[in-house]
Length: 576
Image (tube, rainbow, N blue to C red; front, top):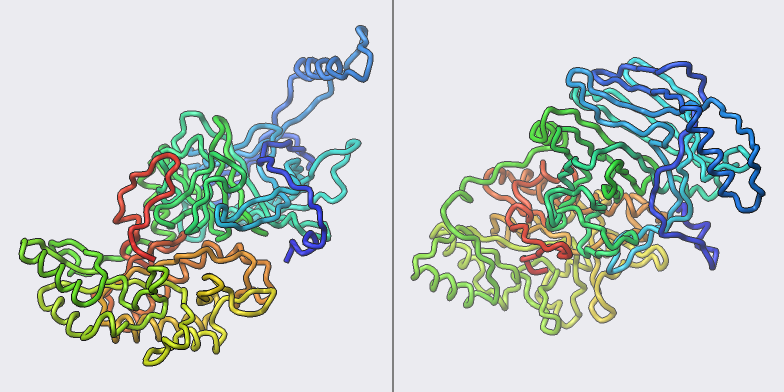
């Protein structure tokens, strides 16, 4: 919605400029360092005086570099007193520094951006301007928090900040559960009528060239992310040039992404906002975290080791569920397709060779499209391809082999001549308004082609979620198909410009990009619980976000070796 003002203009000046350090100006009267306790953390605004000789040397250098003026050899440069400020956040019991900035350099900032989406770049940033000139105007210290307020400016003109410099509020608050954690919130209030300053926030911090950064979902080509720029965006299309950076790496394995890093010394930070984010770790002495959101929220963790930091993170965001006991049987999980006869033939051949089998995933259980060689997204058993389905399942289970399936939130529109004798899932979803819509036409958003229409269930619509849980997961997969497990795949990118139930007017699609696969995983989790199948049934998530771990016992990344080259986008062994 914030971008509508720019949509009317035929020409918009954008830049590929990256977030760079700016300046910090102290406008609150401080005579000495200010130390404030927030739980077990100390938040300090430290002051340092610039050496007068340095000021004089710099002033002369700038004067001599000005080619528009004649050099005055008898120039008398008055060296003013300049006070620089910086922030330092320390965990007092361990003296662990979790956040620090360079004196005189901003530690928060903002930017105005437009975001586009294409097949190669799921969330492409187009910078309109940067606000990296920071002022500290007010510092408030409460019982459990510290609030720093000021302005963020695009620049300084005739000694004054830009007239449309937005206000910001940085809140550091005691964590309600863990004393080794400190919550952070950065809010930017723009006075600009376009409101575009609310679309990107960032924080910066000092680092060392020897620091090792790990995390982000573990999709990287090297365990150490230092020297990389990491995009944390759940997407089935992993473009390599997103955000106009050839060095951009993708966080996550499969499409499981987590906006969280941990260093070898135990310092850690994770975001609690769901919008796409970028962790810029390319520099030796500083890094930045930016979020495409109207607010940046996160949590610092102070730990004695990386293991302890990951343990604390897991306790806050959720731990992985236990697998059913039957999965511990010795045997392979096979992916089979081709119909009843083919499944039985392959099973018999492997059985005769003494190959232990724990389960089979039948990926084409809904039938296959003849032209595209893809399964129908209709989520009912194809009786022609799999006649006597129940007998096949019973025979496999009688020898200790559980049956698994494949499902995703997409639904195909079945041609009229094929609807006879089939349940028409697309019609049910469309009639009830359960599918994502195009904001321009107000019709169902087409994720397929002109000749093969495909919709997707809106995971922000509670009625649609309950319908999919009951109709597809409980009745069809767990019920009629008799499956014990399945792959819950989010095989498309939620369009940032689509119309969702949570955003009827459009414009807030960025908040859906990472949340969508997590909400889809929750559908399967709730269906298993409601059906009373805990400890018996499970599902594999191909995509996810910060809290997906507490929903699933396993993900695609747990079962696929990370054999990625530096330019490789990952592997997807399950058919979609």
